[in-house]
Each structure stands twice: as C-alpha cells, then as structure tokens.
Length: 311
Length: 294
Image 1 (tube, rainbow over the protein chains, first blue to last red):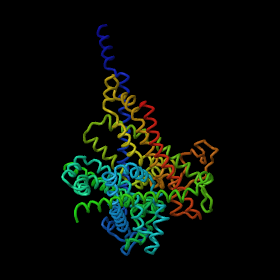
Image 2: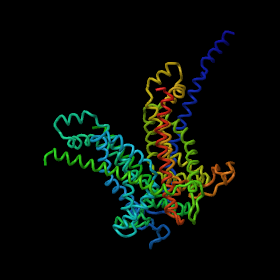
Image 3: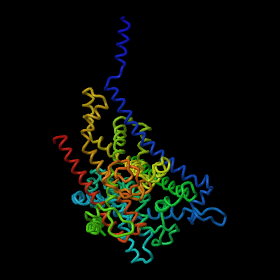
Image 4: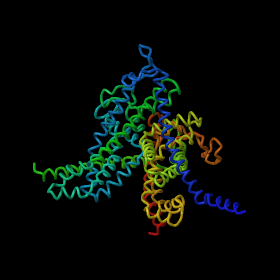
C-alpha cells in the first residue's frame, strides 16, 4: 500500500507540468522553423550545384574552356565537335558592370554619407535619410524601365549605336546601388565614437582634416563593407540590367556595344531551353558561377569585418 | 594651399555631391510619377491586359500581386517568427548558432534570380506545381525569409532584458514569457518590419518570372471557388504580377502602348511602396501608443 503511494507520488513529480509541456512544444516549433531556413539554404546550393556541374560531368565540357571560351553558342558545335559554351563574355560583362558601377557610386555614396553625418546632420536626417530609405525600396524593374526609356536613348544620342550596352547598365546600377551603399556608409560613420572627432578638432585640425584623416580612416572597414555589399547587389541584379544591356553574348569591345551578363543570359535563356539538354545545363552552370560569386562576396564582407574588429 | 582654404573647398564639394544625389533621386521619383500618373484611371487599374491592342489595363496583374504578397507573407511570417525566436531567445552562443546565422546571411545575399531558378527547378519541375501562384509564393518566401527573420530578431533585441527577467520571476516558463510578455511588447516594431518587407516582396520580379509565370489568364471575379481554374483564388493558375508585367512588355511585348502601360504600372508600384512605407511608420507609432499607453 505504502509503496504504491510513493510510486504514484514519483510519477506525479516526474510528469511534465502543463507549462513545461508548452515550453518543449514552443521550443521545438521555433527550432523547426529555424532548421527549415537552413534546409532551404542547403537545398538551394545543392540543387544549383548539382545542375551546374552536369555540364562538366555528363556533357563533358572542359571547365577551362567554359571559363575562358569567348564564344557562347550552345546550339552549335565547333570544329572539334565540341559545343561552344564559352562563358567568358558574360563573366567579363558581369564583372565590368559591377566594378564600374561601384567605382562611380562609391564617391557619391560616401560623400553623401559624410554630408549626412558630419556636415549637416540636421538636413541629413530631414531630407537625405528619408529619400535614401525610400529609394532602397524602388523595385528593380522600375529602374530597368527608366533605364530603357531615359538612359538608353541618351547614350544613343551621345555615343551613337543602339544605346544598349555596359554604359547604360552601369548608369542604371549606379542609381540602384547608391541608396544602399549610402545608408550603409552612414551607419559606418555613425559608429565612429564622438571623442575621435573632438580630439582631432581640439588638436587644431579643420573639419575636413578631421573627416579625411580621422573619421574616414576609423570607418574604413565599415565603408568597405558597404561598397562590397553594393557590388554584390550589382552583380546579382538581373532584370534591370537585362533590359538595358542589349543581350548579345559577345565579348564587350566597347562600353556602348550590346553585351550581356550572367544574370541577363539566365533570365532570357532558361525559359527557351529544354530541361536536361546541354543548352539548359550550360545555363545552370552560369547560375552556379553566380551563386559562387555571391558566396565570395559574402566571404569578403566577413573578412573585412574580422579585420576591422582586430584593429 | 593652406588648410583653411582646403577645408572650404572640400566642404563645398561635399555640399555639391549631396545636392547632386538628392537631385538624381528626386528626378527619378519625379519622372516616374510625372510620366505614370496621367496613365492611371479606373479602367487602367481594373481592365484585363490586351496582348496586341491598345487600351489594356493591369487589373489581373494588380490582383495577382496582392494575392501573391498575402500568400507569401502567410507562409513566411510564421517561419521567420519561429526562427527569430529560437535564434534570439533560445540559441546558445556557439559554433552551431554561428553557422546557422551564416547560412541565413548567405540566403539573404543570394541574387533573387538564383532563388527564382531554384524555385523553378524544385516547385515547378520536381514537385510538378507548374507555373503557379503556389510556386511563386514559395519562391517569394525564400526570398523574404532571411530579411524578415533578421528584422524580427532586431525587434526582439529592443525589448529590455528586465522584461524577460520579470516574466521568469513570476514563475512563467520561457515560452510563456516570450508569447505573453516579449511578443506583445515587440508587436509594433515587428509589424513595421513586416510591412517594409511586404514592399520589397510586392516589387520583386526576378524570383517570379520562372515560378509564378509570365502569363495572366483572364479571371472570373464572380467565381470565388478556389478549385475552379478561372477563379481568382485558384492557387494553381499561372499569375503574372505587376512587376513581371513591366519587365515582360518591355522585353518582348508587342502591344502598341507598352510604354504608357509600363509608365502607369511603375507609378502604381511606386505608390504602393510609398504607401507601405508610410503605413509602416504610422502603424508602428500608433500601435506603440496603444499598447504601451505612452
């Protein structure tokens, strides 16, 4: 009799309370959600990689030829009976457009950020910040459409030709990444402690000397992160670029000749090829290059962050 | 050149740069609104698109955009909320958490066209959902998840540690503390984040062209049975959104008034996003006042 009650008591004590059950349930549910996101990331990388590698494993295209070949024409085989899948024109196009737009956007973005933060914080908070925040939200197709109806005709009028090309793409991407880079640069400048500026001004430095020699130096890692972030966005941008670049898979021989980028070929091509064919696999390989580059940009941002912390 | 002169020149240049940037951005907004607003009319906003003739509208596309937005938010919000709660409230600071954070960061930095291609491969082809609203909603979910998770996590971070200690001190479990104390306090800023991300989702096109498709079959707005093919609610029908429509008619459209329609559609997109922005600010402030009686 006595043993039975202790047993009951033991059971009672060991049983989870309602709150504890709820706790376990909630914890499990939220963990599941988190793991779901991780699974999505793994699945995306896995699927794109397995499709992208098929060009090299099942279609036996040489990786070197793929990365350095200058003619992209997957429907045609060349003199050696090998399909023409040289991705160099697109890779060059993507890098050119990314680097050029970053070069143009950086001085504007950092200049504006400095103005917002150091020279006129009042106007910065009232005018510049709302404007940049708003522009971050403008959809990329709208940028593409404006590029098509304003930038392309202007380039055509000035430089002749069709107006489509790297130059138009650069103009569109410049405006597109400007707000992002500006607001991230402003955050970087904001994180420089106030006493840095006070110390510099107390030493008799002018405002510009303080900005140039102290604030910008101290914020360098943050500014670099902002620029790389902008580059990553420019590299991965698809539709806005596709609308103004002209979509000719040729080596760009001038900034105003029609060319193409990895993303532009992908958006125009994937729908017109048959799944599993070489033409299709070659496009997936381009997608893989795009994915790998975005991982590289991510890595660079991490490295900058780590180096910035050590100093 | 003495340093004072240098100072003046440099500051003047910075004024110039900032002014130029504001000018570019205002010109941009001005151009969209000036060229788009005259196109807007009730007919334009409600009539179906015409492929070859003038005078089509964007009614179906507009409906598709909102329907996809609602579906994508309905799928992504619970997942993002759960993930953010686990990351901020439960996860310990170890290498597993760091890896998970890295994975989320990678997802947020993936080009949206890659997300769209994955959606095409997995949902459209593998799961045989075809070009459909459902495929599109999943692709948008993937596109939206990392940013929404981060924004909800930031909202949780703004809640004082004392609130958590208070909840636990009252004998609540951690989960009860989160659902009864932390989340109500964080609702205004979570909502702001949700509305802002809705603006991004609304304008997204690259992730949709190969998932939700590029065609907008005519809809029968009298038929609300989701299993009928012409019903607006049918999640298995292909659905071109407004953003995709702009891209489509500019790159391969043959209608004579493509430019006018894209101007009008761009203006609609921008106005919608402006509204999302204002709503985010207004609702956040209003709710905060209501909930905290501050």
